Length: 59
Image (cartoon, rainbow, N blue to C red; front, side, top):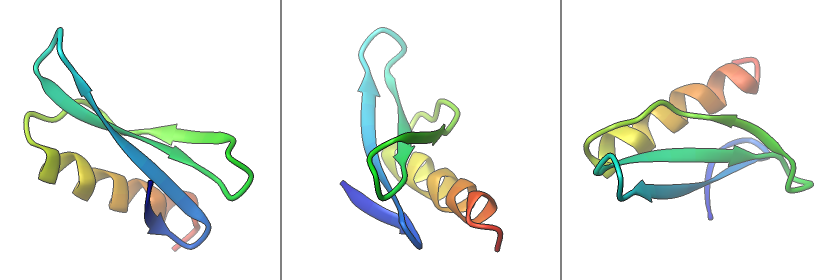
């Protein structure tokens, strides 16, 4: 798990069927709080996760 925002961590997942990446985000308690869209590169998925975590964190 990697931290994407204050109190928000995420895990990069690879979708074999679609051949791309997405990130599932969780709060401090381990409850799911969001998921990024589908990206062709891991770097783009991580950037999308940072933006989503900022929105969820109210920044």
